[in-house]
Length: 71
Image (tube, rainbow, N blue to C red; front, top):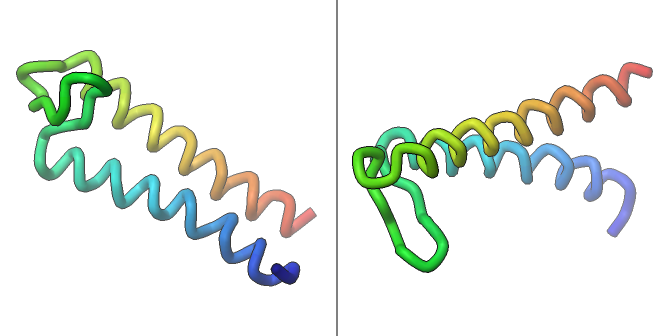
C-alpha cells in the first residue's frame, strides 16, 4: 500500500463507523454479543452505549486526520 491509500483508509473506516451508527439509529436496534439483534427497548444501555461509542470514535478519527494534515 502506498501513502495515499493509507490516507484514504484513514477516512473510510470512520465513515463506515458513522454509517453503521446511522443504520443502528434508523432501525433502532444494535447487535449485542451473544444475544443477537436487540431493539432500543430491549437493551437501552447497549443501544446508547454503542451509538455514542461509534460516533465518538468516528468523529475523533476524522478530526485527528484533518488536524494532522493541517499541521
